Length: 230
View 1 (cartoon, rainbow, N blue to C red):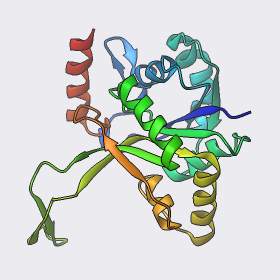
View 2 (tube, one colour; view 1 turned 135 degrees about the horizontal axis):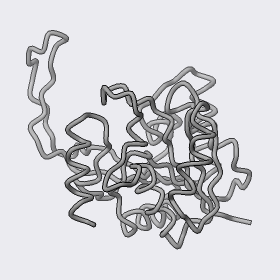
View 3 (cartoon, rainbow, N blue to C red; view 1 turned 180 degrees about the vertical axis):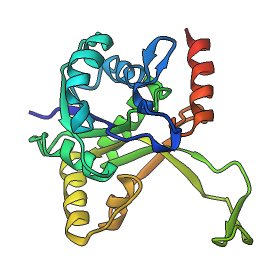
View 4 (spheres, rainbow, N blue to C red; view 1 turned 90 degrees about the vertical axis):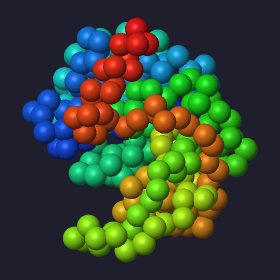
């Protein structure tokens, strides 16, 4: 039976945050960031199951602290992550049997995606096989050297910043991940793996507030945004 399954990737170490506590577990308005993210997916009527991929050493913590705190209605399955994000997504994909399913992959530290954006991404993936959220480049782009000398200004027309969620037909994204593992190809998002096997990916508008919490200033902004929502 065809199902729609979300893979929430939250296995990162959060090194750029310069904090002993991993970014996905930071409290914002009293709730861990990853829980804010999970609640968006739990509220989405299109999603059947959620896989939460976390570092192996965090499995028990998430089982006893994070999932009970989230108070979700949908089934949550914990999956041990890998050394890199791509490995973590692959581990999640191995838990999915139905090849006719749609899989939605999302960063656990992007809590500001809206349910409308999520559902739009899913619906486009059903039509095109692959769809991601993104925003058109809005700042001037510069190509620089390793010493940060500007080489040239890059034309930003038709340039978009990729975001998650990214939704795919299950058989397609599994094939792309298997090919990448065979070739030793590492990408920064799953859409690039589809591109690598010659597939086409649709991109639709996300929003500039759909930030990935990576740096300390992102955490400050997240607190402001979530406090306003509350």
